[in-house]
Length: 237
Image 1: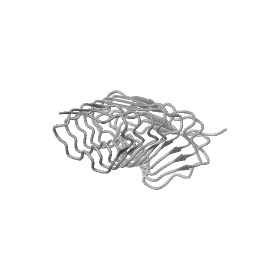
Image 2: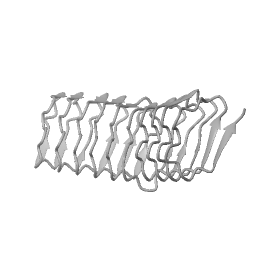
Image 3: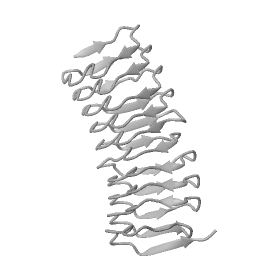
Image 4: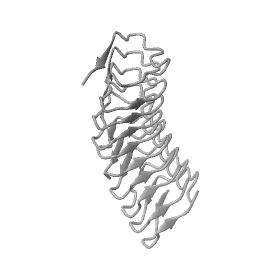
């Protein structure tokens, strides 16, 4: 089933197309400024959707459980992606976010198990489990220089994450940010970081080397399950 939204439409309400399991494609009018919560949630067969450029946010669960969706392209005017917006979109392989002020909410891309490529080169804040994906393939993530905070569970369960480059602008890293990153082999915490959360490296079973600033207070049980950990280097300015 294909749906063509009238060109003068500016509003799509909450649950408007919820559970339309036969919907394959939808052409959204460019004038649309608002799409409500769960509007396309559980549209399991929708393969493509173009988010209108006039929108400035994506609401909670708007596209959650769209299991056939393959590409997510976030237009430049979007400044906030709300909680669970694309969770369980298990066929998505590419995510591109263009706005240099976009914030990403809790579990926004949780369980996007096919995600292979992430370009969030300008997003300013990465929140809880925004990129928590169980089968990221050989992924290397570079956090942009204007990001200052990595939230709780931000990269939790990114099981194929091998390399993570954290810029010097980062000042806070939340609880469990790298839990169960089983392919991560090394980590350098920049000297400008003033606080790291609890259980930061739980079950990072491949982690061998950690560089960490001398001013950081280490919480108890931070390295539980890090069986291959060989060396912790204390960074002195």
